[in-house]
Image: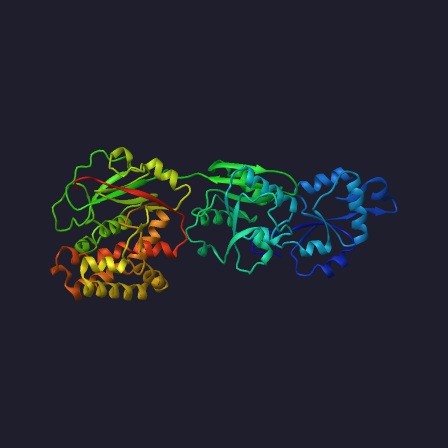
Length: 500
């Protein structure tokens, strides 16, 4: 009998076999041996001898057998035999949580070998190794008998569980998600998974690569997973074992691919920016039908360069999304750059560097501008630039297309349009997964909304500012998206280049 993780506990049985089968119910198991602690020729209480493995052996031999991984539980059907063995084994210096009654076995988790001592070892190691955030993918801690973190308040633990967990688990978990999709873009120092068969474990490694920097799992001694980890250890950056008891914990750090970092500096005119840091590249937004500036342009491959008059730097954003693959990607302007300095006076030396950005993204999911808090709502800002009638028209068109393509975001859209706060300029630096998700969301409605607005309001015939109606609205979409997604946001100041 198997379960979802492929774990079938191996049992060394002490007691009546018919009694065991009649009482065990649907609990998965595999009998690997029979044992006796007394007979007419021996008695464990008197001489410390046990019959198992086809012969009479002493307590140290049993301990070695249990810890070898050959058996998961030494199970007693008779409480009197269990008490006699446990009390006298303890007097002889041996006590193991693998020694259980039938009722304890039935109450233990069906999908892994439970050992409260293993929990304590893990919690201590999490604290000692500085792991501050952990995603418990299988709600491991909720399945056992240890319902408090006790010595470890250092690590924030979230869980994934389709089942509603009892309130006591709040001692462990900060947040419980129904599935991994609900976790969204949150990133963890480590993810904890229950022992699986090797194929399923490999699938989980792929599934979790965007959620955590490290995978923690346990493997019973001699199990298929333990052997698989040993055989494939060379392909990981690091594999550390935490040994002791019936199971060993493994802390696995996958090898990171080389970073392909680029912040695209959007321009619409010829500019002299000769000393940009490594990983910055100028891109001409709206190159279609305009003079070639001699740099990367947004009019090759799959592109919407023709809409640049109306959505400005967002045509460059679309081109990068559709035509380039970077592990870390960002957007800046020819006259605006992120800086970690408190001094906002521009200098090349203060532009956010690749190394500094990557360091920030170890702890955060996205870098954006410092939140702007103005005296007007976002709707009022657009009215100031485009006039009340045109602004109301553009908002209605955009809202209609959001309702059609992304209805779950209508509340966030209305909130932002009535808010005085904003992440400005469409500027950000983030990892590919977040970038791709944002662009898929944004362009699922913005292109259609822009084309409708151009046609119905004849934006091509309007003056410079009203013509940019959809650009002004589009700039507010990053804030709308961030409101609805759980990301760790790092705000940085923006330096303005003088004279541009």
